[in-house]
Image 1 (cartoon, rainbow, N blue to C red):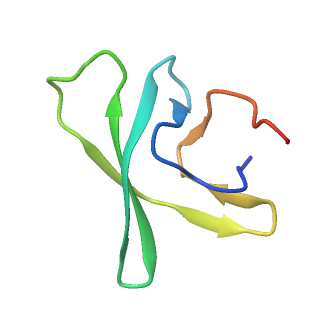
Image 2 (cartoon, rainbow, N blue to C red):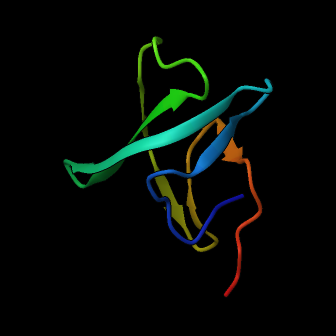
Image 3 (cartoon, helix red, strand yellow):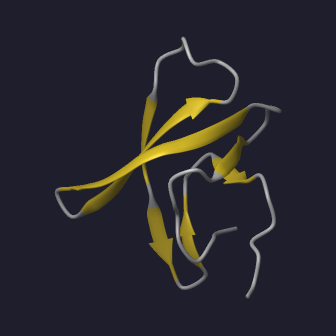
Length: 73
């Protein structure tokens, strides 16, 4: 499952757990989009970096799924 665009402030659920992560930063590194996330409610924990993937359905973060349904305007 993917979204049309990954943005700062989006919430993603870690697959296999109930943990919710907040996207805090996006940047490009060597032709890849990197996503920096932190666990929601755990500001003291370390940030994680994940490489975003792109396909025909949109963008996704491996090991995570969107926590909210994407709103269509």
